[in-house]
Length: 157
Image (cartoon, rainbow, N blue to C red; front, side, top):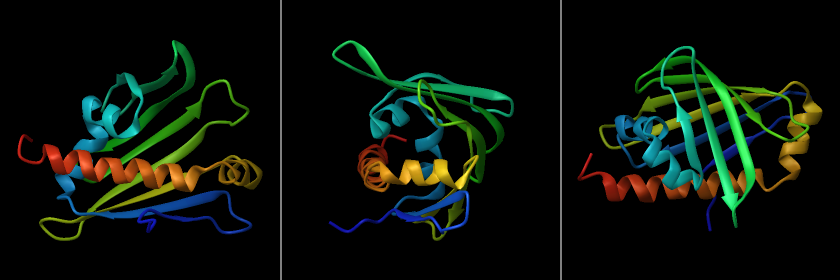
């Protein structure tokens, strides 16, 4: 299966650049990051909080058999509808420090759009640690789900 989400991590740098083109108008792609119900569907996690505004915050949680297996939170520093979100991201109960994420949403045509994510890590070591996990496969699968779910919702949105 082709990996449509591209993950670029250069040696000597503390960042990962993630890009993906979607067969969705930019407004629907942005909505998939803004609407808690849609976020829950494509991320496969529960949205405990999602305050889409400058100085807002968010918290996500994934459970399995009643036990929390993943929790992440952060602060939203910039929120410009259909254009960009700047936020911090912290995986709780892990050695990973806070990372900074820049999400940019770009209209390509009336029916297609592009997401570019720049993730900055405290060190190249933490970036490399994340890349040793199935990160690239996981984000590609999540973006595939995003495309499928929003395609189904297009007529109702």
